[in-house]
Length: 311
Image (spheres, one colour):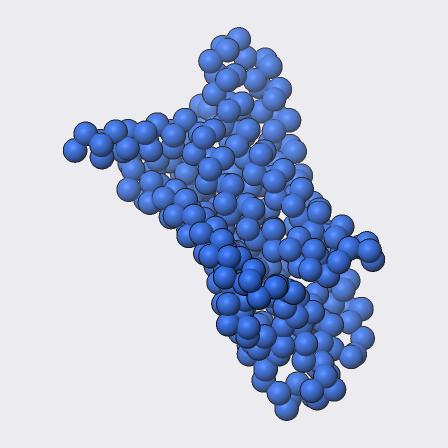
């Protein structure tokens, strides 16, 4: 089956974890709890933004994309992995594998672009408060959101258009889920163009995101240091700290994931776990960080909780 042409097969095999028989169900139930917790937290954040009129501001309309993106990332990966663990299934249809890989890469690029858009919004609000309402209109916010998702979609689409043109001579994906690098290894032809395009796409995403965020936060820091109002400084810094924490979480987890594949002495199972973390840690921590560090969301949650208790 390893040498069959992809035109003759429509099924791929995934490379599963080694899990002792007694550990299968505990790991499955732990995974289900993690998934449901992430879904609950992100859905709660989405619901607050939708139904609370106080949160109908440019900042939160842009923030709306973050939990939505987190739901895409964790839902595209974890349910399939958990299903394979409990059923012992290794098979996946090629087109479903391609869809999973596309969604996971969309998630990764989406985090970077959404955080850049949120940083720009905070720059406008803090450094240009008098112009903020006239610049960050509903049309501008809609354009920013469309740019974030549109640019992410086009860059990731370019990767997979190039990938699907390659002839396949292998049918085993050396991972517990499908991603572009693992699917490229199914081909026996030259993948130099794909590798260069992948590096270029990653570089573009990182440079654009980091540049916008670096510019925005440096200007915000300068504005805060120059302000005589300590209350304004505190509010501005607290608003930006959440976004910086989320960005750092994503970059640290991503760096560990990349490094785990660069050292030969790292076990394959550990590499797979590190690969999963980038789709697990941010979706779990992002809504918690925003709930704790953003006063509007925290106060809204507390008010709703008090109303529910007193009702």
